[in-house]
Amino acid sequence: MVCVAALIAFGSHVKAQDHRFDPPWNTPPESKVMFTVPGIDNVPDLFGDINDPQLVVFFAGNQFMCIDDLLAAFKKEYSQYQRVFAETLPPGILARQIIGGSITIGNMRITLKPDVYTAGKSRIDQMPEYFSKTEPYAYNRLAIMVQKGNPKNVKGLKDLGRADVRVSMPNPEWEGIGKRIEDAYVKTGTEALRKIIMENKVKDSTTYLTQIHHRQSPMRILYNQSDAAPVWYSEVYYQMMIKHPIDMVEIPAGENIEATYVAGQLKNAPHAQAAKDFMDFLISPTAKAIYRKYGFTTK
Image 1 (spheres, rainbow, N blue to C red):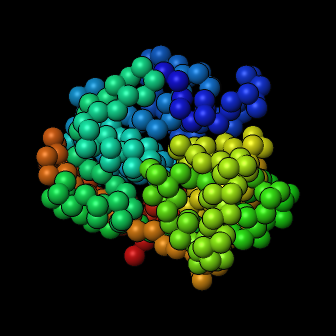
Image 2 (tube, rainbow, N blue to C red; image 1 turned 90 degrees about the vertical axis):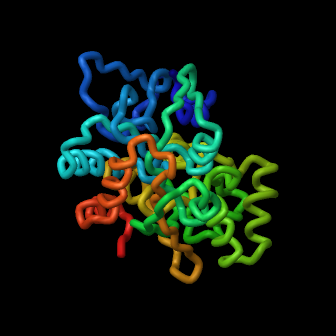
């Protein structure tokens, strides 16, 4: 199965043998056969036990860095659940998967139904008929990811409108963050800035619209395909945490926006008790500490 992010990000710009920054960036589970081939067979956004899971969670993809610690802590506190499957794809794609009942990645078709779906508040609010219960559990804000040393001297969102700055931008069509970044462009420089970045620069290819920003944006920066990427603060924080050559440009509060992550328990959850237990776990001090470890905030 081909890694979607790797294929999209690389194209013909990177030599086939040059995969030093490739995901998965998490720690894969142990198996008798460990078979991951960078750029070819590499599935970074599907986690855990796809066979007969006791809990299925669809996470908005920008939380991928939390999954190892989060699921390990959940299994420790709720030892009756050891087979957990999680996806960390874009929230709009996960919503389509919930509504349509399946997703195909490469040659693999997945028909598992989620017990819990997490996404930004606006996305959850669009699907009230699907949930028996919802809970906010973490918060985030925007930052700009740049190459180490910030060679283009990007100082803020207005600089993303410069002709010499190649921007990696989440596609608002299915990435919830995309619409929030557009809001920040308007707050920063009026509608004119949004139009320059999202229309003019898209046409001349100096703005690249991603399909899966939490993988593509850092990879495009790391492989010198883009100069700057507006992302969630936690994503830049994580790339710096794992010592990739990335720097952060912070965005002032007056130009920034806050994201609220909300978990929804599915009305038709196949594992209803497990779903309830995971919802309780997400708002526990243990889970909140994990989110803070990776640059999110909690209340």
